[in-house]
Image (cartoon, rainbow, N blue to C red; front, side, top):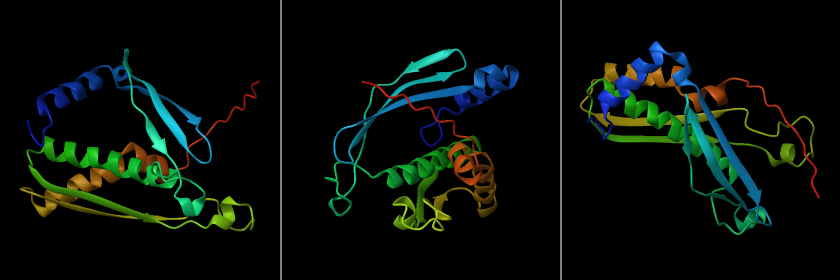
Length: 180
């Protein structure tokens, strides 16, 4: 065990996927329902890893603060987006350190971004609806060297799925179903 991660099991998983790439395919299914005002509840349904279907049973609440006409009953969508980015990258730092035998004593990621509501509200067609840039700082400490931490950081920059999804254009396919 390293950083509370079973490194032998992680290595075995990697070897299994290397031997049979189909075992590394992951599919996610989440459902979000509107709950009035700007409140939503998202319920992850399943994660499929290779042939294994993992049932999920939790709620992710989202809302806006009162200044944005919500009741502040959850993080707002932008906070959830940045939290998802930071959390995904954290997995990479922890796994990278564990697989190198490095015990972490601290890992913090702080991400900041600014968007202009004129874009979201359709008030100015020249203003993007979302971020043009995000900036994040990673603070990491443990018994690794600066070079080892730099290697881990480079791996996370290259391999984090959520970082990839935000740093690169991905195709989004929309389907509208109007119900009764």
